[in-house]
Image (cartoon, rainbow, N blue to C red):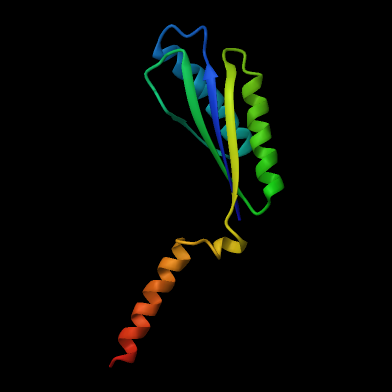
Length: 124
């Protein structure tokens, strides 16, 4: 399993109010979510009408698919008519097959709980 994370910083030079910025951001979010089926949220400082920071997340069985989805989002952001793509950063994290092998992951926690239950059963 792979998780791709992308941070985009958009400059919205024509925005004179938060309402103007929200309109641009909402339109972009809806378009990206509708076409690519990724999670998108505005993060960072929310009260600056001329700048927006967005977080994007995608989960896939393939590193290549994550990379392609992130590239597609960046491409869409770079062609926005009302905003400029000012910065981007991305990372793709591997969680091993089915999430197994993740140190500190839920599987380990559940395994620890099973071990505790086994210990209780053995002491009886």
